[in-house]
Length: 393
Image (tube, rainbow, N blue to C red; front, side):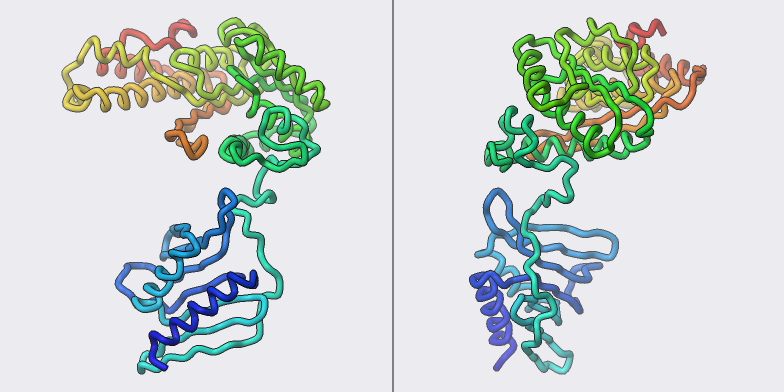
């Protein structure tokens, strides 16, 4: 039997294990190919939007890369890997394990040994145990918001929204865990919309972190406020409520955590202002649109090292975004917040979003930061930043 025949035998065994639902995983090792720093590849079966696929984890010296392929195309990809560098491969099934080896003296072997794994692993791509918010029939709000059916199964057209909710909670989880469960927490979600994330946040605080928290969603559309208040009542969420009004109109200064996701243009500044005014311990915003600063940069057209960039509309837009959010971060630092800015993915169908997080650490104002803001405005031709006007800087 030549080496190609042994590979075909290995691939046939893979096909049979998939057909009989006994497939567990495949590991490839002893790589001698041309790709730098590639060490192993691990293959498992996953389920993505009701379609079974094989997930290939390419393990390099300092990183992993995951690629998902259909069952049909995986066969040819695996055959290529076995002929172009991997000298050892093991197929694990619940019935037996199959080992393929390519020795340096041109000897090729394939042998069947007793199964080392007797149970099938989960093939859920996003397993519930890794999610902060799980879907179940007991979570009435997920059904009422159109995320699940009455039995608690996530609807096909709501898969992305459900992932978005969990990704949002995952981003906040490390920050929220710092709050003591002994302290009552006041959270305000500015611009809460239909309340998907507001409900999930309350659920996470109350049922996962066991924090005595009251959460208020602020929304300008009265029909959404009425809907969300009804769902909160029907779900038994006693300390979750929704208030009608704009961010600017919100008067409550008793805020521990302020959140504003995708508040458009200066509405993000209004939210940060409310948080600073309330001396909130945590401010989290995901800005949307940056028209106020962009118009000033475009109008004044300062001549400096960056003028070759901002003469192009797309670069001007990106520059305005960075300058606007950079100044927001500095202003928050001026008022005693330690800030960090990072990108997160809201869901599979949106662009990357910037998340600005500010944690209160001190009360004093740093004169150097104020001077830096003046320099930035002069450099880019900015007359004022909306947030600094709100704060009388």
